[in-house]
Length: 112
Length: 115
Image 1 (cartoon, rainbow over the protein chains, first blue to last red):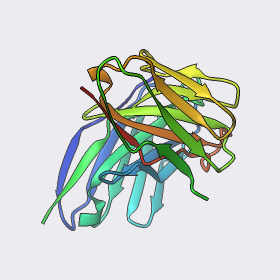
Image 2: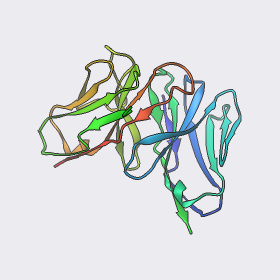
Image 3: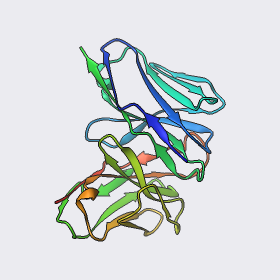
Image 4: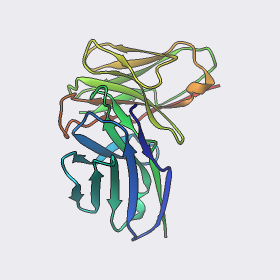
């Protein structure tokens, strides 16, 4: 079946790195996505990775993909209070690329 | 260019009442989606429309109906609301073409409470 799983909570100290993990079961897509949701708002695309890549870096964000283990991670370097949000991993479904399957979301909180 | 708009922003219903959530996009996207978001459950797909004239069930379609009125608009109807449908509802759209830039754009959400 199609499933995307994430841990629900992560707490890090300001200035440290945050690592948010995701596993997925099946995907028809060549791309995998990370979305960010700030309080009271909808989701916004944060970054994505092409499935033939192992790593993608975008400023403070690093995405790692282990396609064999179907494991995706998002690393945020030098975490700031503005990074407090819920982060969603997403992948198009295996049965239909039009279906986008989201994980449960990881709530990132920042300690001073 | 307003992106994806949803109405209403908030709604309180009594059990058994019906209502329609409206969604519109002005980006000429082909695909549109309805999700519900519940604490600890993430986003669950209710229905989607890959292109104008088609609709398909997602993970949790029971108790809902949809209409793809035209390319711009995709509505979600609750015929007989139940407390289990208390949630935040998000509409989203995308071009529906292969490619990383074909990401979903989300509306601001509708917060629905069923008493």
